[in-house]
Length: 74
Image (tube, rainbow, N blue to C red; front, side, top):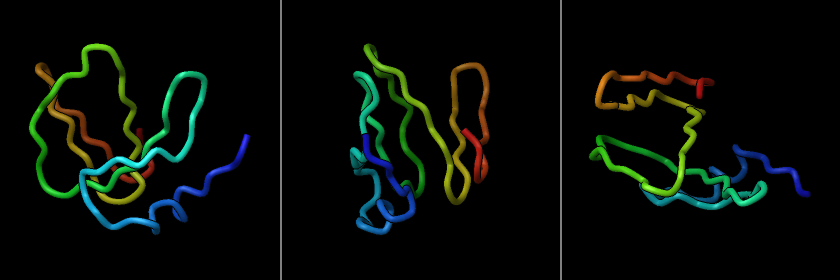
């Protein structure tokens, strides 16, 4: 098991919308991504996603509601 510093990993890339695998847990990948602008709604049939905002704000538009995540929220 290795510890991961999220801020160090984020400093290693600058491209947007290109997730980077920074760790693994059981059969799950832990990914970091930098987002900018709007992204179209999509669906993953066989996997779940968890989002944590380090800096900025993320609005997730679901069919029934919008979820607003601010810095430090997931």
